Image 1: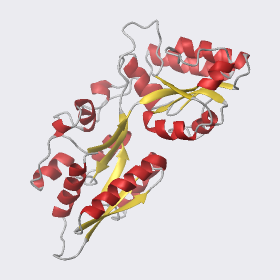
Image 2: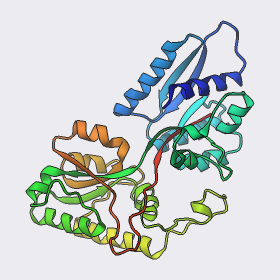
Image 3: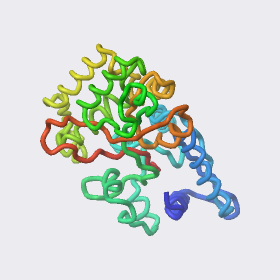
Amino acid sequence: MNRFYFSAAAFAIIMTAATTGFTQTKISFWHSMSGELGKQTENLINDFNASQSDYKIIPSFRGEYEESMVSLIAAFRGKQQPVLAQIYEIGTSTMMAAKGAIYPLYQLMNDTKQEFNSADYLSTISSYYSDEKGRMLSMPFNASTPILFYNKDIFKKAGLDPEQPPKTWQDIEKFSQKILDSKAASCGFTMAYAAQWIGLENFSALHNIPFGTKENGFNGLDSELTVNGPLQIRMWTDLKKWSDQGIFRYGGPAGALDSAPMFMAQHCAIFMQSSGSLNSIISEAQFNVGVGMLPYYADVQNTPQNSIIGGLLFGF
């Protein structure tokens, strides 16, 4: 994140609060960054705090994304919310729908006369955190997209080319079956966010089909889910079949806390997860890690399309 915008955001927030002339103002900041990303977040905060003496960011790790958002909602109801909060992109609509809980970024910058240009961000990122009028509701902090990780050593043991990741769902099934038959691993693949970000939202985007009306919900709270289309049904039917066959192993709801351990322990050869996990997976893996794109159905016309970003944002 650009340090100027971190400073500008902090300053803009301070301008909305009463402060004394010579007292250092403390800014509470709740986040969900752990591991290597947590260290980088701490470095950003420490650099900002060391750059001046008027303001001090006080960070507080609040657990996984879902836990952090629940904590923030509870704190708001108890009038003990932080000044800054980091929320994952799925929670954007939830937080903005909570009247009075969040100060929209565009309004904050306007009210405090701070210079801010959303064009400084990639349009694919800024648009994801903006309303239908193009006004940024929150400040993007980090962005990611789901990708495919695979164990090159297991691929080699199974007689697969370790430099060729699976590209389609047909490849996933074929490669996984060969891995099981060769006993190179006990599971073909596992997936984080199987029922949400990866298995539904990005699956739909890659195949150019909506999962909700009104621009997938971006253009109104009265939108409706459309997750029971032919391709989505095909996907869930295949996952059930592959689960029964031992090809797919479910790692749990939301971020699937059991999926990463299954991959890192080399029980599953393939793992679909956020690109934000790249550094930690490569640094901690006791095997050679390969990376590929999310799979798609090869028999569907005009596929694959683009995946959808994820990431975290600042709420005020």
